[in-house]
Length: 149
Image 1 (cartoon, rainbow, N blue to C red):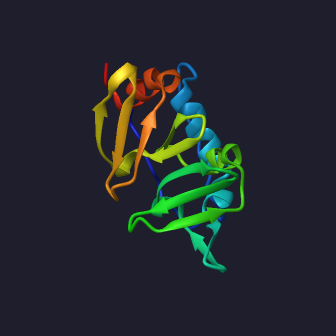
Image 2 (cartoon, rainbow, N blue to C red; image 1 turned 90 degrees about the vertical axis):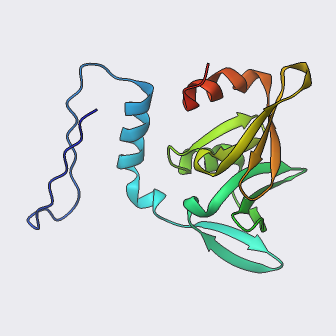
C-alpha cells in the first residue's frame, strides 16, 4: 500500500482520505483507529498496590482475565489490575494487539517466541517472560495475522 502524508499548518485537526478499490478488515480497523485517535491516545487506568497508574498501550505486553480481574503486564513484568472488561480493552487497543484466546489479548510486537504444544495448542512467550496459550479457536486467525501458514 502506498501512503502519503502532507503536513500543513492550515489544518486545525487531522483529516484523512483513503482511496481504495475494496474494503478489507485491515482498512476497516485503520479507519476505526483513526476515527477514535483521541480516545486511543488516552492512557489506560490501572491499579497496583493501591496506586493508580496511567499506562500507554505500547507499554502493555499482555492483558488477560485472571479469576475475576482483568490484568495486564508491562515490559518489566509488572502486573496491573485494569478497570475495564477485556472486550472494551480490545476495542481501545490499536492494531498491534491480537486476541489469542477468550481470556487473553497480546501485543504482537512484544512476542519473543511461539512453541507448538501437545493437543494442537501453541504456547506463546512474551519478551518479558510471561507465557500464555493460543487456543485452537484463535490459532488460525493468529497465524494469518502474522503471515504464517
